Image (cartoon, rainbow, N blue to C red; front, side, top):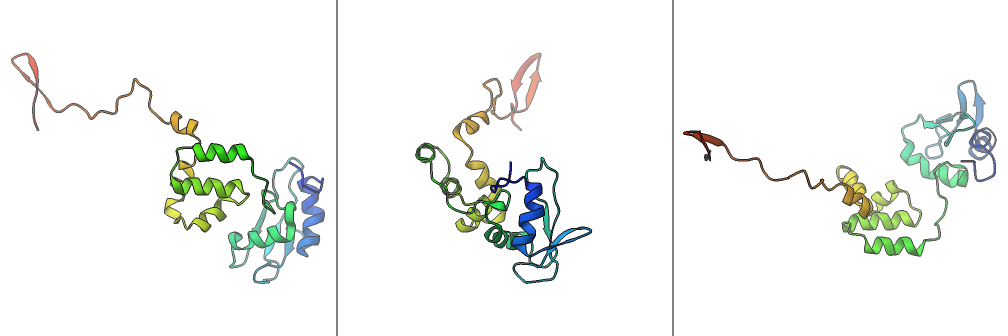
Length: 177
């Protein structure tokens, strides 16, 4: 997937990123000051291979990637792989499918926010979903066909195992524990 400017991600990381982040080349890769705390040389990225889908980058200050990512997305715009810079036009058919889906309310809200172009992590933050519940909320927004796939085949029984069996005089009878 090429950069929206028509360049490959490798050229984008080599030409656009240094200019937009006010970075410079060092032997270990490109470096720029942190966009949040202005720490020297805190953001690092390297030029990926031509067929790469993203530009590898890291933050070496106390801010962390989650705090710096929105600032980089604002500075880089569509040159940030995986980043959506604006709201997308919503497909009416997708809204209808969501309205008819049998999913829990929070998962429905998550899917609606994602439909507008908000990332999953940002939507979960907006909804106030705690970390220990995030995987469940994400899993529950699966399509109805995926939910049907999770059902067991008819040959598999979910009944409890038989109670203890006792043998008396060659006959099998049920015993109580």
